[in-house]
Length: 138
Image (cartoon, rainbow, N blue to C red):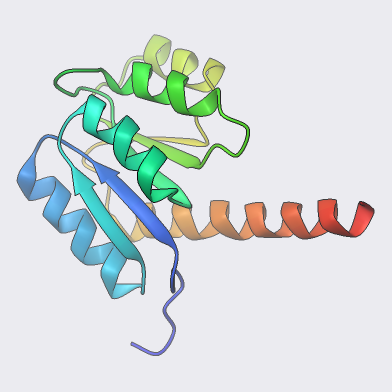
């Protein structure tokens, strides 16, 4: 594939369902991303700190620490990664809470992989553009 839209972007995938994790991993790597997968909330926080990902795909329902607690912890940081939360929960309260915590996108499962990739590409491009604007203004 010549047009790898996520080339060299570091993506952390957090989902306790191994099938979902491997499907997302395959889709991200097909787009050129460097991926890491973890299956619980505590591992997500430590993998984010040690790996410094550009973006995180985060399931809401996780063992050891919920996706909301992971989101809250990571968005407190100065250079927080882009976080896309995925969940089977269609409740509006959960979406509103995730947005209040600073989630960059909230997608309801089953998420078509092309939509997940497109969402990440758009968010990363916007983030890169924002950083260039800030650098030019500095």
